[in-house]
Amino acid sequence: MGTFFYVVLAFLIGVLVGWFLWGRLRGELDSLRGDLDRTRSERDRLRTDSDRLTDELDACGKTRADLERRLREASAAPAAGSSAAKPASQAPAALMSTPATAKSTKPAPAKPAAAKAVPAKAVPAKPAAKPAATKTSAPAKSATSKPATAKPASGSASGKPDNLRRLIGIGPVNEKLLKAQGVTSFAQIASWTAADIKRIEDVMNFDGRIARERWIEQAKLLAAGNEKEFAKQFPTAGTSSNS
Image (cartoon, rainbow, N blue to C red; front, side, top):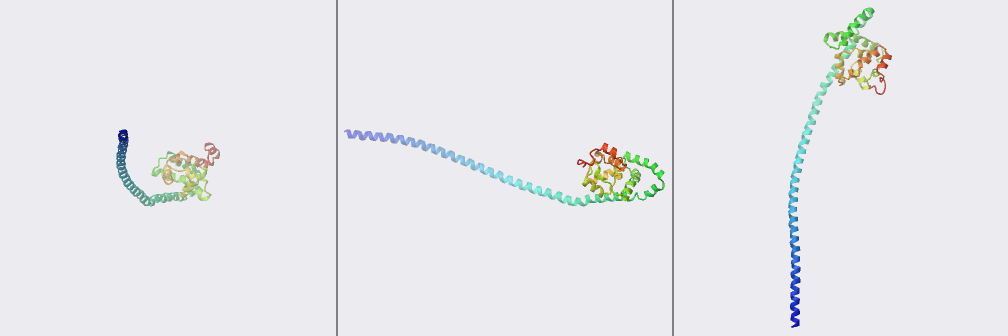
């Protein structure tokens, strides 16, 4: 009787322990199943995001290829335009250089007239200077200003060219460009008209720089030999800050 009681008691204890362990394992199993479902849903969401990002990346690649194609077309168009425009841009330089040489050769006939009558030379010099001061470049006035350039042309032909780099704003590059236009003396710059200034600025790609830096005023003082007044008005001329 006592043995049967112990067997029944052990069976009941085994059932209780088994039920407890099974309940606990079942709870853990349900938890693991929930985690697995969440992991699967997260995996599906990541796959969706990956597909979306792949589509966006493909769209960006197509947009980049289109932009690169447009950029190549745009860069090719100015290159072709610049190659076609080079002869046109060089032609004005050649045309602009010929009037400069023509100016230096035209006043040569005026030299004997000035040599014949020295007193008469001083009289027309004043009216010739007035039209140049007004700077209203008309065909008649430009014709009257040419005799004024006869002096620099004859001076540059008979003697050495002036050191144009003494003027503020004229460096080695600008001096070469001016000499290419036939400008080699201060007297030539001093007698420039509005048309001459426009022609020189077009060739040298200036925009009002000649007036701002007062090239003509400087050249007038140097052409007249007024070194004292030149040094007073333009103290930075000939220094490192010249050009």
